[in-house]
Length: 88
Image (cartoon, rainbow, N blue to C red):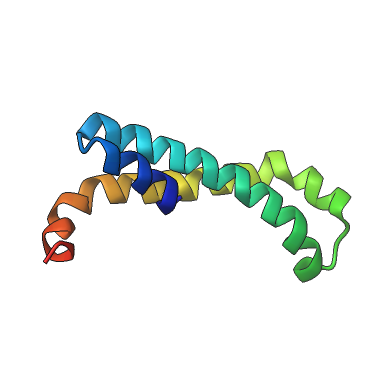
């Protein structure tokens, strides 16, 4: 999420680019978390991959979209005020 969003935003630091970068980061994070959940969830929940595949559309995908979306909104709203301290 951060690497892609940061890379895109670094090239052109405008609000429009920030929104595009956050959307791209959200999509990348959501897609990658689907694959990570396919690998890790069966180990921790002691279920088969078929069960996890059944959860992708109803639980994993919506949860990760919501989580990344909230991260994006919070980042968009707070970045400018926090950036002052980060660049010192």
